[in-house]
Length: 68
Image (cartoon, rainbow, N blue to C red; front, side, top):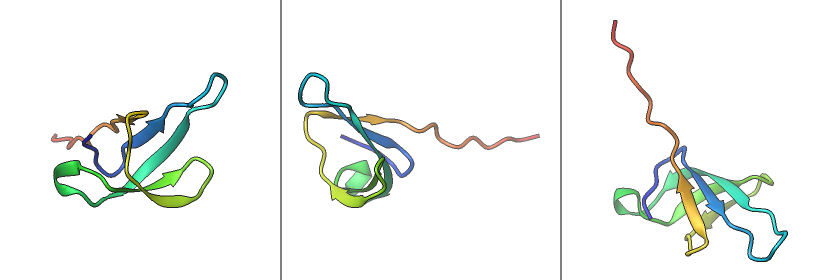
C-alpha cells in the first residue's frame, strides 16, 4: 500500500451492517509512501496505523500548478 499526506484510508466494516471507518493520513513514515501512517479518524482521534487487507487508500488529487 502506498499513500501520501492528504489521502484517506477507508477501512471496510467487518460485519454486515458495520459502517466503514475513514481516516485522513496526516503523516507517512514508511519509505516511498509505505506504512506506518499517522491518521486522524473520522471520530477525531489520532493514531499510528498499519493497514491490513480490509483497508484501501482513496487518493487525494495532487495539487496542480496553474500557469498563466
